Length: 107
Image (cartoon, rainbow, N blue to C red; front, side, top):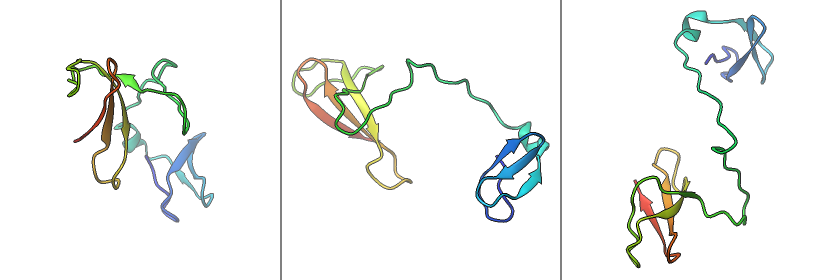
């Protein structure tokens, strides 16, 4: 990742140079840094979850065993939300697949 010397915004690669989308400044690519970057594989459609406020979305099923305090069932739906400030861990919200009991877990 390369940042603009003029305004500090993140630059993007276009051709053989880096361009700042904020102020339009250009710079040469820092190829020494580019060798350290790791490219991640693109997510498939099955992995991407898009929801909007009020959507009827229960979340993803847990991949590890959790236990519902009400019925003892070991599988629940979960979603993750950032409820505190950015430097705090996110909160996981669970909903039991058996009885519908809801609870949250703080990391």
